[in-house]
Image 1 (cartoon, rainbow, N blue to C red):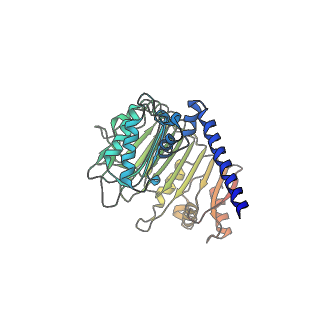
Image 2: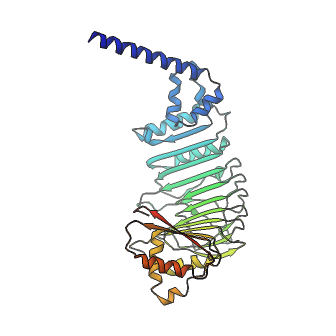
Image 3: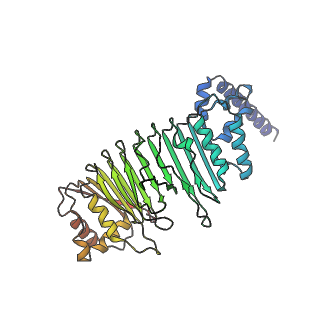
Amino acid sequence: MKRTRRIAKIERESMERDMGNLQDRLSDLPDLVLLNIMKFMNAKHVVQTTVLSKRWKNLWKSSPNLTFDSSDFLWVPVFNNFVSWVLSCRDNSVSIHNLEFRRKGCIGPKILDEIMTYAASHDVQQLTIVVNLVLKQDFVLPSCICNCPSLKFLKLYFWFPYAFASHIKLPTSFNLPTLESLHIKHVTFSTKENGSVEPFSSCSMLNTLVMDHCYLLDATKVIHISNSRLTNLTIRSFRGDGIAYEISLSTPNLSVITIKGLPDHKFSSMRNLPDLEKVKIEVSWYENFPPNHLVLISWLQVFAKVKILTLSWSTIKTLNALLSSSSFRTKLPAFVRLRTLKLKMKSFSSMSNKAVREMVEHLLQNSPATNVDVLKCSTFE
């Protein structure tokens, strides 16, 4: 027994020496290396490095990367105070490369405005906001974010309790000259005096745009997406809480478009749209909203010159049902340039192989030599 305790003591002392040596080796590294290590840590753990040694006491204040996540805290009020404390103690001479703010539970607009204002005033390059907002009135996105010259990546994902019908209002246009990637969810576009909505034409470097559950106010029903650099576009709409709208595209370099959700919007104009490389269609049907087959057919007609087409399982089922109707069957387009058709099939499908084969043959009847790839998808796709 004594021998076992001695061995355990020796092992513990050896481990403590190793930890001490590791701590010393870390402290010997240049500040830039230590700050680079910190970018993989959330803000709470970054601040906790102050206990390692005197060398670390103020180092965190110079970190250009801040990741705030309420899941790291037991109490939300403590999290809110921590965020404000970090921003007030940080070295204001250091610009922010990346700031992420994720909070579970509902928050008001005050702390959100504080985060955005601080980020914009410190030349933020990448900003991610993912929150559940409680609003008694509409919240207008701060102009400092909509006109931030340093922003290259912006992600704004909002959720709302069903009892609140307020809006996160975007400006009539973004003035973000270096922005390359924009992801927005549950936001509302503002209308110009002439009644038009064209928010992205001033984003001269934008190449990726994701719009998820975005709405229009008043009587405006057309959103114009005009951008010469845009190459990748994802749209997911939902009729439940907004006005069904039309989309006008003037995107000469667009090569990939993904459409998800309920088919409740049409493409009214396709000016300066070349042949697309890839189109992905993932429709969803809901019990309270009857299927709008004409909208789905209009999508296929618009993108008839696509080279690679991917169809989700729910889209395949819908097309199979349409083929049983002669009126719908004649409206399906001919994909004259299609090189690859990708079908996301479920392992246990109610559709027979014969039905799938007939649907594929109809889609490809006027297509050149086309590869058909069958992809397995999960139960929930």
